[in-house]
Amino acid sequence: MVDNLIRTKGREGRRGYTLPKNDVDGTSLEKILPKAALRKEKPRLAEVDEPTVVRHYTNLSRQNWGIDTNFYPLGSCTMKHNPRANEVAANNPGFAGLHPLQPEAQAQGALQVMHELQGFLAEVSGLPAVSLQPLAGAQGELTSILMVKKFFEDSGDHGRTTVLVPSTAHGTNPATASMADFKAKEIGLDEHGCVDVDELRELVDETTAALMITNPNTCGVYERNIKEIAQVLHEAGAFLYMDGANMNANLGRMRPAEAGVDVMHFNLHKTFSTPHGGGGPGCGAIACSETLAPFRPDPAVEKDGETYSFVRPAQSIGRVAGFHGNFGQMLRAWNYIKMHGPDLRDVTDMAVLNANYVRARLGGTYQIPYDELCKHEVVVQPPKGKKALDIAKGLIDHGYHPPTIYFPLVVKEAMLIEPTETESKETLDDFIGAMLELAETTSEELEEAPTHAPTRRLDEARAARQLKARW
Ligand SMILES: Cc1ncc(COP(=O)(O)O)c(C=O)c1O
Image (cartoon, rainbow, N blue to C red; front, side, top):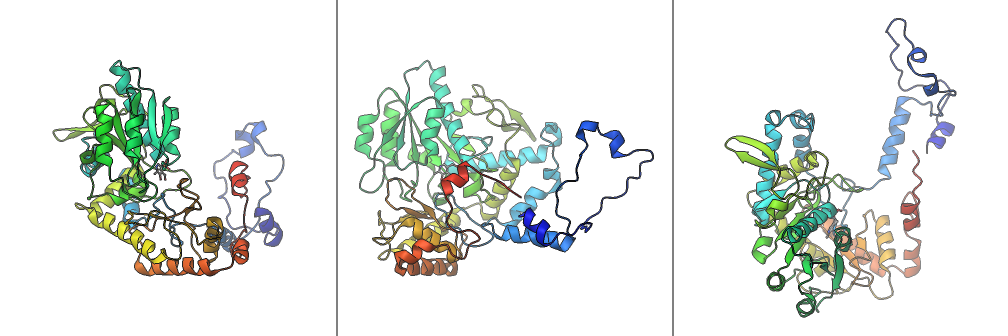
């Protein structure tokens, strides 16, 4: 890119910006800097004027895709609009300028936000204790399972070696179980795409530490037997952990504690907006029962009278993040909840309505493996003879980010579509129109797609594993 800029637009001596003259008497960089640090040759930079450099980077940014560019129905990832009011809150100099080592007495406003957010999450989950430390959903999972582990260790129950994980689970679930040094055991599904309770009864025994359930699961299906599942686990002395990455479908409608959940994580960076992508920054806050509360990470925020302070829970697993976690994300989530509160049902209802609208309109042309009311996302399969990959690439030519494909793994040629609550019917109609058009397009034509994107088809696995970043 820069090579191209140098060759086509650059001219020796052309400048967009000039550094101010050194006005400190008697000094020069050559005198101040160690000899080894001095350049021997001029850097190879494009010598261009300001309009050229602005256009160069603006055009580069336009080749990128984001929720601000167009509809982004990436199933499981909840790419919803990030309200700009969130940014105003996060950019408030009183918050943005805080140093992580600022004494508590000088950061009472920030601690108050954290304390209130803990309270909101406790209310939404029905679970009394919260930690905002984990920096991502996957880390929230790990934190939760490490708390379960420490509970058994501190109780002297050393036989709990297994964590059960449904076959629909996000890959981070079995990874979490292994990282916490448990054996991950897979559990199958019934005809509705839900955890098979009969199989669960066979698998659960005195070695079971927990089951990691996602509700609604990654097929967008509500785990209708969750209360029975919780009972089976509790009778065996094990815990029910819930992957709450899909809380977009539950807010104000289902409180996990009432279904028997002992510990869960939230993806604040999905459920409560806040930008995410490229691995972060995120916030994978956890909520848990009184039994697990003493094991939460250090620190949690508590209020005594009018004063907020950081405290270490009695049997804490320790720190899981530097300082106090991703405070900017907490502020944004706090703001989102305040904007929608006190009743977050509108968020859930619109997310579920939008997904069911897509399901109803695509059904008949696309196959719907679990064709009943879905929650906030729907899994579809392309018409016979067509591939999910080709339809996804075709969508790029129509100006859409493709949905998640080939996940969940239990559905062949899966396309997981999550419209979210922030999209209008008009946007959904346009997207559905594109999907229906692609269903009619010949496989030969589809195999050529994308034809209007900056790059054609990439070897995506190689591009990710052998990344050659240039600027
Ligand atoms: C169901 C589910 N669980 C866990 C995660 C992990 O969250 P994160 O990407 O923040 O680590 C995701 C991510 O999208 C998810 O969809």
